[in-house]
Image (cartoon, rainbow, N blue to C red):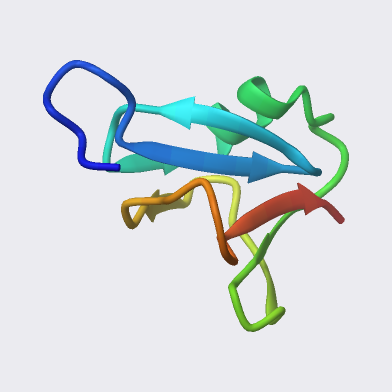
Length: 78
């Protein structure tokens, strides 16, 4: 699917729920709000190879264009 303008450019998977996102970056705070993740638990990034990394609270994540198929970056609570 080619984005022709106004629609979301990215798809973010937070605990199995896919969310549309139209900016090239997302903060940990925005991830928490989008996924309703509690502040007392870490946010973990899971890459397409299933490697996990705990994100810092002040971190800004650069997104790569997503597709609605295949593996994608996943975020979850720790």
